[in-house]
Length: 108
Length: 201
Image 1 (cartoon, each protein chain N blue to C red):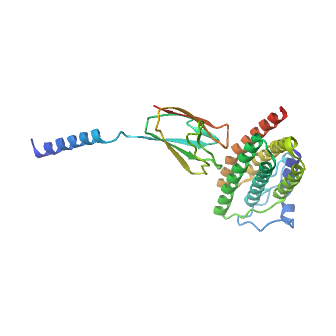
Image 2: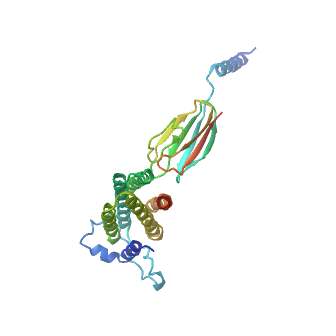
Image 3: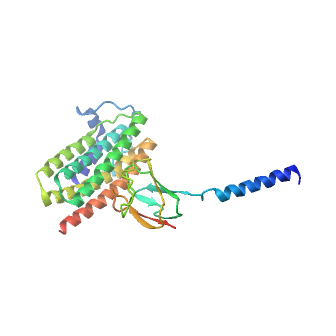
């Protein structure tokens, strides 16, 4: 085996070993709060993923689960709120200030 | 058209008179508007685009937001109804946010809000309505508050869409006004729903 081939093989094996031992990758899913609506208003994520709401309106909003398991409090203009999906299931949520705003988060 | 809306539009049609008013604020840092071209007879119902300055618009926006914040704070102090308090909380928070955005923008643009007859009329109307509401309590207050909110937001929406947006010269100010429209529309819908709910009790 040439030195170059040995180096390549070692590189591939190292990558495989790293992949086996590393924690599963998680994603960050953006939800835009615009014009008094959540976009998307329904989102499916994997366990461990993060959902991030950003407020693009000129008024404050909240992101509050209907079960009140989590509640952002007032999110000011241009601010964000994050929730990590730690349990599987469906969670409906709303804005406490604007009751007509609703969303759904599904964790698989 | 509500009475106040007529008054506001009439006030906006006579900016020269407003500028001479002893109640006028400091001169705006914004460029002076170009002289208005003679308006055709058919456009009497709407002020010419150059009739009001961005500084006037800023003053109207701040006065309109402050008026509804005042109504909301009054309702939070006087009403015991959960639906009324929910609505009032929403309007206070939203109009505070809109005001903060407006103040931040005019500060950035170095525009000093300049009172004109329209912003002064808004303040006078707010004082009149506040005094009227203070005379009421209980269900009578709740219904009068909801009715006033519907009236007020219908009037403000008409002024924003019909006069302020077409008149705004600065693009960012125009965008801010356009961004405020969904809030005002939503408040108007919610006020009408609140009034309907209160009447059915």
